[in-house]
Amino acid sequence: MTKIPYKTYLTEDEVPKQWYNMRADMKEQHDPFLNPETLEPLSTEDLYPIFCEELSKQEMDHTTRYVDIPEEVQEFYKMFRPSPLIRAYNLEKALGTPAKIYYKFEGNNTSGSHKLNSAAAMAYYAKNQGLTSVTTETGAGQWGTALSIACAHFGLDLTVFMVKTSYEQKPFRKSVIETYGAKIIPSPSITTEVGRAILEKNPNTGGSLGCAISEAVEQAIKQEQSRYVLGSVLNQVLLHQSVIGLECKTALEKLGEYPDIIVGCAGGGSNLGGLIAPFMQDKITGKKNPRVIAVEPASCPSLTRGKYAYDFCDTGRITPLAKMYTLGSDFMPSPNHAGGLRYHGMSPILSKLYNDGYIEAISAEQTTVFDAAVKFAKLEQILPAPESSHAIYGAVKEALRCKETGEQKTILFGLTGTGYFDMAAYNQYNNKTMNDYIPTDEDLQRGFDSLPKVD
Image 1: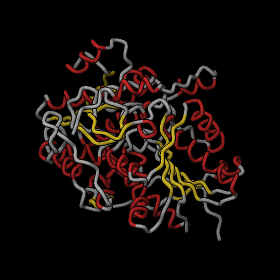
Image 2 (image 1 turned 45 degrees about the horizontal axis):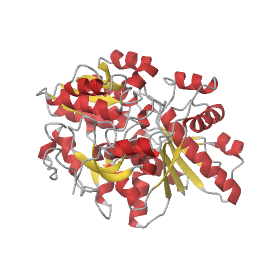
Image 3 (image 1 turned 90 degrees about the horizontal axis):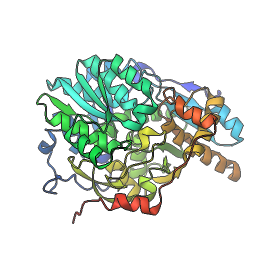
Image 4 (image 1 turned 120 degrees about the vertical axis):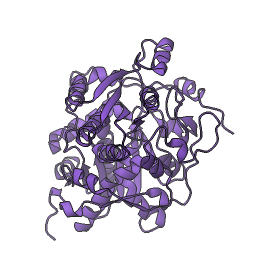
C-alpha cells in the first residue's frame, strides 16, 4: 500500500452539499426546551423573537436527517473548505506509539477556527429573512471573529459581547473583529440592563459566556430587525458543524481508514458535535462502535462534575431552559486561558448522548493541556489554540495507552483552531507562572444552588 500522505484534501466538489442532523437517528430525543416564564415546552414559533425563523426550525427539527446547504453558503465555504485531514507522523514517532493519529485541522481561515462553518449559515439565514443586524457573545473570540467575517460578507451589522477576561487577555481579537466592521463590547457591560445588574452584584467579575449571552439576547430582542445568534450549544450549530465530520469520514474512507477513537475538546459542544456527527450515526445504528471522548477543562467541568438538569442557558435567565449537563447558570469559571471552554453547560444533544453512554468524558488541568500543546507545536508545526489543546491532550493519552497495550488503534481528533491570539497564555506557560484551578465541591454547589426548580 502506498504510504498515507501527511495531508489529505478533498476536492471542492467533494465538500458536503448537505448537513447531517444527528437527532434524526437518536433512539431517544433530549428533553424539550422550556419557556423561562411558564416552564412549558417551547414551540418553534416561540423562538422567532430571538432567532431567525429558519434557524428556529432547524433547532426544533428532529426528523430531517439531511438538510440542504444553501448555494450561497456552499460558495462561501469554497473560500476555506475543504480543510485538511492530517496524519500526525511526527507526534506518533515522538510518542513511540503503534497507534495511527489523524487530526482534522479547521484553522485555515482568518477566524483561526471551525466557527466559520456555522457563522456563514447564520449570517445567510438572517440576511435572507430581511434582517439588518445580529448580536452574539464570544469567549475566546473565535466565534466573534468568524461571525464578523460572515456578516461582512452578507452585509449585516454585528454587535459582539466578549467575555471580559478574554477581552483583556486577547486585545487583538478586538482589532480583527472591528476590521470586519463589527462592534465589540466587553461583558458584563453597562450597555444592558442585565449587564448592569451583574456588575452591581459582582463589580469585579471577569464575566462568563452566560453573562455575554444574556446581554446579546437583551439587545437583540429590543430591535425589530435584529436577532441573536449563538456559536455553540444549540442543535442548529451542531447541524452546521457536521460538515467537519462528513469531510473527515470521506477522507478516511479514501485512505481505507476508520477511527477506533475520536477525541474532541468540549465547552458548549460545537466542534465535538460536528466532528463526531457521521461516526455517531454509525454508533447509534450499530454499524460501527468507535469510542468518543470529550475533553474539558478541570476548571469548568460540566460533563465530569456537573448535574444533568434543566437550566437557563444564560446568567440573566432570559433564555429558554435546556436539559443539559450544567454547573448552574450562576457558575463563574476561573479566568483560565481556554476562553471558548468556559460555558456553564453543554449541548443538549451531547448531554443526552453522554447520559445514555455513547460518549465518555475526561477533564484536564491547564498546565497539563499546555504541556501537550507545546509538544504538538514543536512536532507538527501548528500552534494550537488552548481549546484545541484539550483534544491533543486526550489523543496523546490514548496513544500512550496503545503504547502500553501494543494495540494499533486509529485515533482521530479535532484541531479546532490556532493559538496566535493566545500568546499571553503561552508566555505564562513558558515563564512558569501559569496556575491551575480546580473548583471545590463547595464552589460547584453554589452554582448548583442556582438551578431552577423544574418538576
